[in-house]
Length: 134
Image (cartoon, rainbow, N blue to C red; front, top):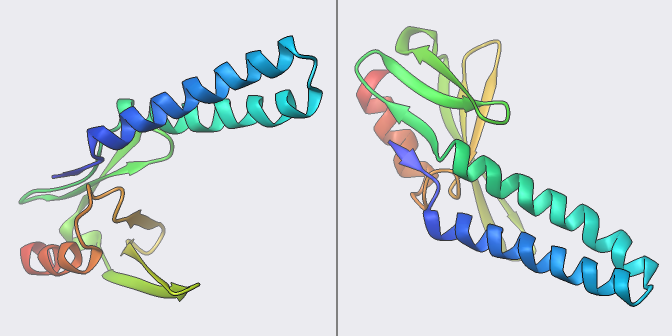
């Protein structure tokens, strides 16, 4: 079972609160541009924090298949025989290396980052999934 780290969810909550406080400050000082920046930032970071609280487990594997988060907080169970491919997409940009775990079921492509996997390497998770059920 791979879940989002709780510490990062707490940082998102604190970030949303900080954006809200800045928005109120800018509103009281009649800074319209600041309010225009703070409101969407508060909503976006707050929504990300709510998702982390409501659906902390992003990927789970057992004998019957895997369960992945689908949509905002929904879950979808996928039997092993419906999984067509598990691969890792590696990209380099601005000197940084990014990995995304791709689980292909034919009709859906589920993408998970290292963040979604609690800091685990996407390459290691893909290898484990391949050994376990494919």
